[in-house]
Amino acid sequence: MGKILVTGVGGNVGRYIGSGLKRAGFDVIGVYHNTLPEHMDCELIRVDLAEELLNIHDVDTIIHIAAGLDGSTKRLVKDNIQATDNLIQFAEKLHIKRIVHMSTVSVYGTAAGELCESSDIINPSNYGMTKYLSECMVKESAIPEKLVIQLPRMLGPFVNLKNTKGSGFLTMANRILQEKDVICVIPQVRYNNYLHVAELKTFLEKILKKRGDWGNRTILLGARERLKMAEILQIMKDESGSQSEIILEEKGESPICSAINIKKAERMGFSPECAEKMLRKFMHEICVRS
Image 1 (cartoon, rainbow, N blue to C red):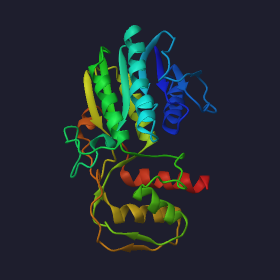
Image 2: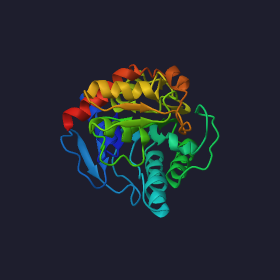
Image 3: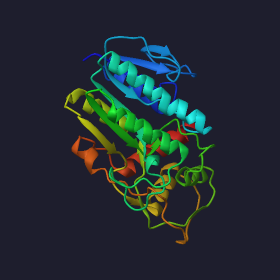
Image 4: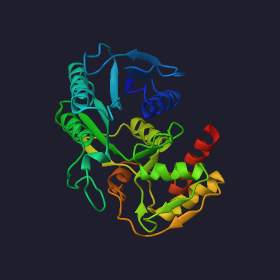
């Protein structure tokens, strides 16, 4: 196998994936823009993908994680669409065989009910729209094998609970750690819109080693079991040893994208550990860090 190019290694998920693949024995080249990733034992290249084409060789596979998450529409177009276009041009010029494009459940906007890869796209945010268009560009490219992975809320040791960016899930986790009471207005809603980054790394290792033909696929990832929100909060409370009281009120509407169908990903070999273990791992990491 040739080299694996991982973009976005200056960010949390990209750094975790790049470092993990390197430890697993893959020959990794990491691309970053602003933040030099620490403790990465691989070749690193600093470049603004939206401004220039890469100039490297012997790359077999691209894992495209770099993305803009917020900012103006113009900025999101630059970071998510122009950067992806330049990366595709680089891949087509070098006849690179495979690309994994990390996208997001946000492409579906406010779609209700269980999400699957054929769900309607309803009123996505500017971020979701730019990620959807970048998906389309990858799927229409001349790269022979293309895999678009739509990610849920990513958990890991890097999560910043001081800035939950409007995530109710993380806001409640933060209140638990602060020993504050948590009011849960959707206790019976079954939820699996999250995944520990370690499970993403394991899945990538599996498909990279298997060398099966990906074709042109899109898959959704998420936790395996759909636990009730009340159960999720209790697990996080138990693992952290918090004295918070979880108050169940049952008066809220189900959040968008609460249930994700992962059957298509499972057919590709995606097999995450149980949801409770992922949640406990996440809370342990956050407690140790704090």
